[in-house]
Image (cartoon, rainbow, N blue to C red):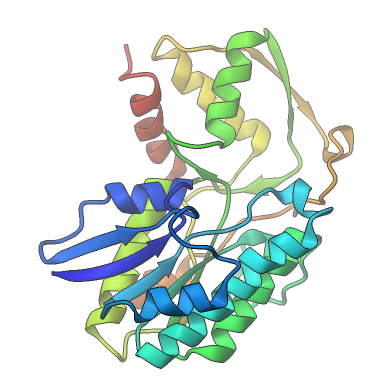
Length: 295
């Protein structure tokens, strides 16, 4: 049995990596923060050295984007220093490292989809700390894959789909931002992509390394995404409130969000043959789990 060490077991992606149907002969050893102190480099090094892992997938992150603006030290410990410690330990053990990153490394000013080699320019602490983690991994360990993603949703944890369903059941009308663009990402789909990359890197020392993007296919806005959620939810007997489109300026937050989070998946398609499905298909699967099938 070949084992892959996975962090972030309490998060959306970590939970899906635990639920993923790993191929025969493979198993994920999924850790939560209770299992491993990500602020302790020595503990990280000891965990990586504990057994001959086939690969490490670091899906743990400090994701409280707004809170990070006043809690920079904590965000940097988890998002930058922990990946640095994993990269050091994985290099020493000659174990490939798959690191999850974010669209927030970009400033959102581009009109089209962001390519992996486009200039970065984070707008706040969260994005800067995640970029710090990227740089640490890139400079410390050649056998790495950094996979940026955006707008992650699932049937578990806290995310936009679950928030919309909850508030949509409580209120007859909702105001949703319509000038931020991106592609929703199913956590189960992302987990499958991470698993595929990790397995190939474990099997093939010459497997493609570097930066990749993964998000489900198709552009939308938060307002458009909310409309799709409620349309599909109503078909399942769920809530269907009226929606009002507003601008980012109408909904101020401590952290600035990228106006454009669209990610080009061209490289992960070309190098790993991973072709993300449309986000509406992925949304249907999530709603089937949360509400039930279409009535």
